[in-house]
Image (cartoon, rainbow, N blue to C red; front, side, top):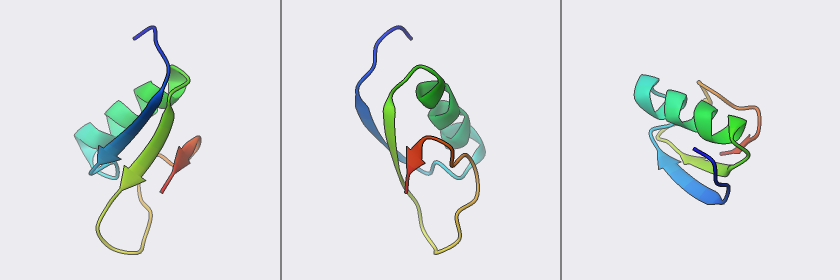
Length: 49
């Protein structure tokens, strides 16, 4: 990906969603994540939960 922008990812603490989130953060996207439960698992650097 060669763009940047804002994105909301559902399920970012899981395997597929987490990988998508990591790649978007690495490409300078502003990533917000939505998940069930209170504990944060998965990628967190550069993301807003």
